[in-house]
Image (tube, rainbow, N blue to C red; front, top):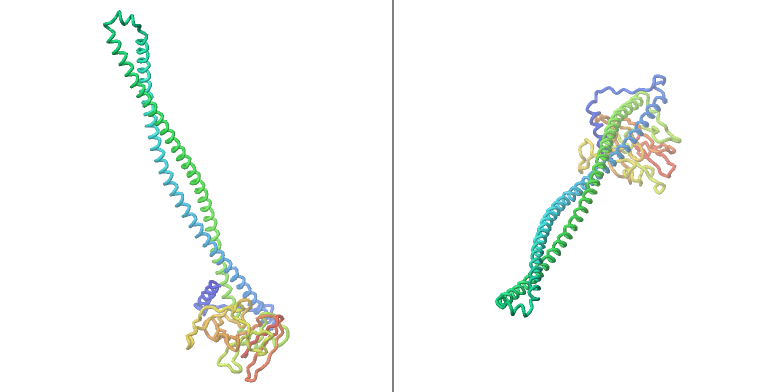
Length: 420
């Protein structure tokens, strides 16, 4: 709504900037320009445009909400993309670190495998030496006592050699056992390193899968972002078109207001005085009758709980009419800035093009409204309209103030005081 009010103010400034521009509006040539039919035509056109602009205001509000929603979603998606990119970057670092660890483990495994191969070669050589010594010592163990006696010269050599072989074999066996233990330890180390490598590879694969899933998610988020950016651009384009149409209608409304005032000034007051009226029916003109310090409309609405015809207990400014920003009028002595007033759930009770509230709630919830022209001069004799359908009555109070009041089907009564 703030946006709509801003548009209205901008449009009014636009109109005021070109006060000399010709904006003549007339009835169709088939109508008598002095007939009530012509006035009704102008009023119908005014009401039609007012409804059209109300519809445009609603559409603009929808587009504003849509843009706000899309902007919020885009901000959320952008944050999700940023967080996802950070997780992907973190995973890339972890995967690189795991690759380095796997490379180191592969080197350690290769080194362990080389050590095992070398140890196996040494074991094989030892096994050959041990086997040879076992064979020789076994051979010497079968030399009989007669042979030793007959060959006494070699006895000491044989004995010495046999002892040497036995001693060396024992040492070879001990060394062989030591190598065997070392090979077993190396194999266990190799298996441990292989297990660590498999675990790291498994973790790396899981991270790569997660990274791939995150990349897919990021692509999906990018697509959502692109779609919403497109929708946002389309909404802004549509809003720009609606704003242009709104501005054009505001100019047309000002033209119609001017034409209606010109009709009244030329042909006199032909307002409805009593009976059933519909919303938008012309029921009088803004004046200064009774206790009034200047031309204005005292407007109020009350329900059946209140007997004072022109007093009010319905909050008019609570959406029925809308209080806008402050106008160009100098501030009141108490600092109050006379604000613009716009149609809400009901139409304005007074023609514009500029309607300003000169006094807020008083006499209950009554308000005072003044109509101004685009050039900021008072719109004397501005038409007064019924805000809702109902039965119209007119009267004069004890101070000479002319007023109209309408009994509405919902039990409310609207009052229009200080009529011309």
